[in-house]
Amino acid sequence: MDKVIFLDRDGTLNEEVNYLHRIEDLVLLAGVPEALRRFREHGFRLVVVTNQAGIARGYYREADVDVLHRHMNEILTPLGAGIDAFYFCPHHPQHGIGVYRTVCHCRKPDTGMFERAEERFAVDKSRSWMIGDKLLDLQAGRNYGVRTALVGTGYGAGEREQAEGWYDIYADTLEEAARVITDMDK
Image (tube, rainbow, N blue to C red; front, side, top):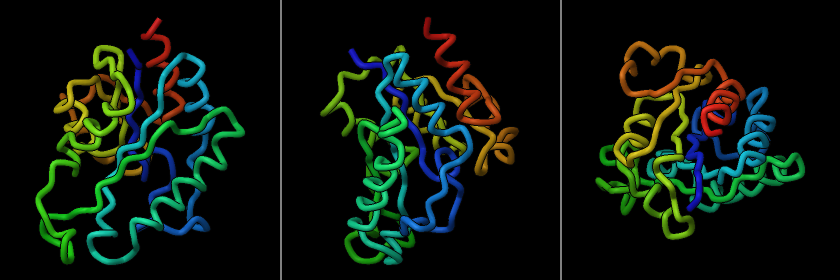
């Protein structure tokens, strides 16, 4: 069975940029490579699950997200912090255009992206986590049946009170969350 760290992307791994899709706008948050490397050293798989409403709104294409994710891994992999898989939801139920305007099973807080990960990984839910900076990340993790961590980066500090009761741990940064989670996993 695979221990998996499911990760939100924007505000958790990289600076929150309105509809990030260009590689030149990608800025990893401080300590992220170190946190991801620590998870990998402790035997965790790393899986990004991210809502990408910018696709639904017509701001950018699915291919742009794929390019950004490949670029992210080009930065992280040499640091021992590569992401094992990226999954994104391109839909939005109200603001989508054409085929992207739909209620779907993949958009967090639903669990479709997690279930897609199960096609590749034998997820051990009892030892897996969802980490994000928004309440909907925590709701998605709980809906899927894994423990949750709220990080104070991105929107996290502002959502801490509203998210009370939805997270198992709170950490100011992903690096702090990695220390706590890997210490608990012993």
